[in-house]
Length: 311
Image (cartoon, rainbow, N blue to C red; front, side):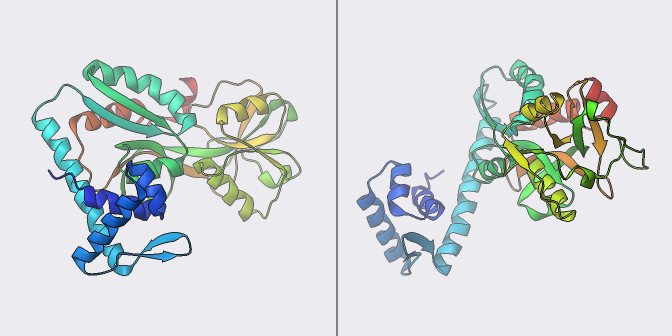
C-alpha cells in the first residue's frame, strides 16, 4: 500500500506540537516540513494547524484530518500484517510490553516458548509503567501489553482487554511489628485498618504505575497524608519492608517468599484489579500475536492465589 507520508508527517506535527521537533523526528529539514504543511493546507483549501504561543495546535478541520489519518495508517498496518501471514513468513517482528515488576516474572516463562515456535522472529520487549505502555500500544509501537487495570477501567479505552486473573491489593508490613489482623469474609488475608499506620513511612511506586494510582486513591479515601518514599521497583520495596523499613501496598501476584513480611487485606471491601492482555480495538491479530496471547493465557489465566504464592 501507499507510504502515507503525508499522514505520518501531519500526525507527527500534532504529536509534538512543533514543526522543528517534528522535522527532527522525521529526519527532514524544518523548512521542508513547513513547506509540506503549507502545500497540504493549500491542497485542501483550509488551515489544518494554528500557532498558539510556541505550539502548533490542530484546527477543527485538522482534528478531522488527523482522525482519518490515524485510521488510514491502522488499515495499512493491518493489511501488511495480513500479507505477512498469507505468505506464511517464518520471520518478522513482534513488539510486546509489560510493567517492570510483572515482566520479570512472566517474560522468562513466555519468551522461550515463543521462540520455540517462531525461532526466526525478532522479539522487542518493553518494560515500562502502565501509562507508557498504553501510549506505545495506542501509537502502534507495540502489538500487545500485559498489565493490570482497575475494575471498570476497560470500558474507558480504545483497547480490547482480555482478562487473565483477578488479584487483591494488600498492605505488606514487617513481621516483627506483630500487627494483628482479623479474618473477614471475602478477603484473602487477615484484615487490618490501614489508618492505624498513618504515622509510619509508606514506600510507594513512582507515579504512572497502576499500583501507585490505587495507593493514592486509598490514602485519599481515608484522608491520610503519611510520610512516603518513592521507588521504581516493587522488588526493592519488598526487600525494604523485609528489613523492617516501612510499609507498602502490593499486589498478591507472585508474592515473593519473604519470611519477614506479612500480608494484610485492607479497605471497606477487597481492593482488586485485573491482570489483562491489551490489544488495539480494530488492530489485526497476527498468528504470532495470537500465539503469544494463548501461551500467556495458558500459564497465567485464572491461577489461584495459592498457586501463585507457591510458584
